[in-house]
Length: 73
Image 1 (cartoon, helix red, strand yellow):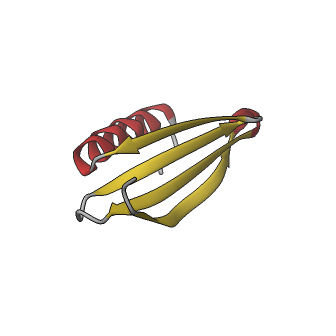
Image 2 (cartoon, one colour):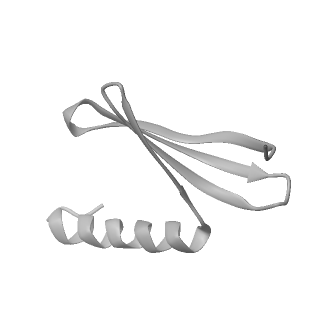
């Protein structure tokens, strides 16, 4: 089993009663990942993202939000 240290970054509610939690996971090797944990009732979806994937996903979501919300961020 790999030793990991988990630090909470952000937690918020999403539409339809979903909960989103962002965590930083650090491994003994020095690798760091962003863990996205989505709760839907009793079901959880967990994704571990490397910095490159997290940046690409974050950028795509920001671009979509800016195009969709006429008032901007």
